[in-house]
Image: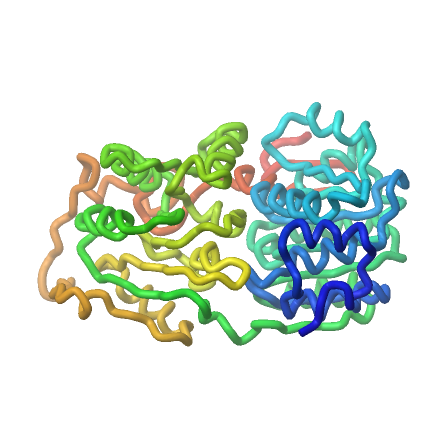
Length: 437
């Protein structure tokens, strides 16, 4: 097996790796690090938990010089992921004297300006807030030598593609650049062709969406019975648990019910202030809370190695989100469990996800002897179910009203900044196209 010492990393970085208890690199680290150290660009297709953060972070730390200005730029779609990347870089670079700062929407600009004034070598940013700094001159890209686009497909989905192109056009052409994405839609391929120079491609796990190493199962039940089974499955767990819900309102309700049952649970969703979200995640990461109830805003921004169980309280609205959710367990080669609750109305959506799962999937209805009887809407009218004192028909399946539907309508600013447009002069126009700035 290859050792980190064989990848060409210096002793200061190796000491940081040793402190973290790592001895052998993951496949993507073994493949990507030597290529980046030769100065060649990289396109990596790898899913969550594959170790890609360390792959680009270690290579960047090796090449960047302390006290020489901002040389490294990493762009991520959400503030949670940006903060997670920053923490990883700090751990790996513990002995390097290289400083890193996170800039993202939702945090006061003054805090970020103070950190930048003290001098940094690496900036981890969400695109919207990075452009704010570029416009006011608090961040300059003239000395950039390394650029990373992490989870590029998510940034595309969130409408950041124009912002990314604006930023890259300001950066020096002579730089080492890498792009990482779980999927490779046409727009991402075009972006890589335009901004990366003859990149070496690594399609690690490109055909594997199975969630290997995770014991996956599902239970088809009535929606009103979900909480009872949630409690049953959580009680015997000794490690930490993440419960994913479809909407912020469902998240609050589930967290409240868990509190009533005397579980030590915290919640994270879109309407929380940035301070409260950081406080909540801090409790979960440090083990002060055993259960995290979250919307999909957290599915890509959590790296907690002690998560033993992930429960999909609701079916995700995209097939790929299922794998991002369950990827919060079985981190760094560990084992984990994932249980999905399938309400009668979501059986069709679940069947689409099941086709992508390439490992054994346990049917808990069969194991537990639970009989299911899915109503046929063509034969009779299904009465509206009541939830939280209101009929389901009173809940919106989208938009701004209280949402009971499957799509999580957290605001775009909640994910790290909105889409900003620029005219030919480079002036900032509207935030979402509504007002002049």
